[in-house]
Image 1 (cartoon, rainbow, N blue to C red):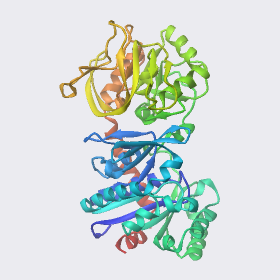
Image 2: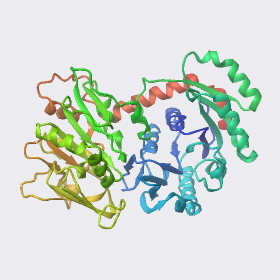
Image 3: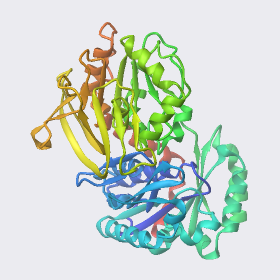
Image 4: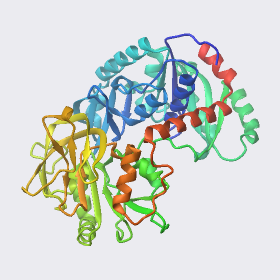
Length: 502
């Protein structure tokens, strides 16, 4: 890629949700970074319960964290200034530039988008002034004409920053010609004039067989097709949200693996905590939504939750609570992270209705803790020693609840480093070591910790050492390069460079 002008912007919008916008931004961030450019991602508004804590203690969506890492940048809340975290019943917590701003029903949120747009554009201008290139990402379909006057994430940021737009369509969904032509027909002429290129994503088979389709689209629209990107499954990039779980749900089959189940809560958050386990060759990971026998699993994990009281009620209504207690009584191993940790306790109290209308609910009563939800959220990086393994761990905390021991015989899961004062310990561990809970997201990102953790689950199991010594970030860095190389192979680079110079 030749030398390009600085302080420029490019916007990646889509014909629909889940067409691959986030992945395209990730690939371009890595591609630009590998060319020596200072590049940053930006998404004005994201809706996801997968979030992350920055070094400054701000909360942002993990999709932009992944893109930041692909760009070789430390994640910043300015990359995702507005984050909506759904809590159920059309209600979402609104995170503005890293901090809780309000909790609103959808109707009330739309009434306040102008002030949010102004703050988002402050963040965008900050990024533009500090990087060579800023790559914007849209949300859903950019052709939702009924939402256009209150949409702060698609064309408005592109117009504000004078960005060229690349429109992404998903051929796997079918009707790719209608996707593209229909989008161009329903948007305004001002918006259409921004679109300088098209990408057709998730093509199965030989892309050269679509050459007539490319010619037809280019003749019909007058817009160049920059790429037909083949469908791939051999590149491991963190998914944007829990929609991907439907593709990974399975029951264990291989007797030569450690079998781990994750209960797929309705309000699951930060399910990507378990990606390092999912891709570990020694682990068979299953996301379970419908109640099933847990007898064949070596470990059951309860994930984070954006509405822990409603998810506890779901566990009760679907008889998961009795199944988990039977599993625990049979010496099964159970772990809980964040909301999952709270679910393992005796009670959850929400006197101020932080998460909804349930003021109090019994937990699974597998750990001697009680949790009270508070409006003030804990956002911090944490590190320490996992007590039962004597292994270093590090990660981040995002939670409204504060948990306290209800027995003098409780022991902590993690002994915290001095920098984490005033609290010396974190989490709770059962006396027999079979049940544990922790607020620490990112727990499994450490290769040495996974090695010790898996060995403790099943000491007699012969663990393949080959892929266990690298931290997950080292692995994903290689995947970013694979992704960039894959996209570059299929991009019409001369067409892209022409757009970038315009």
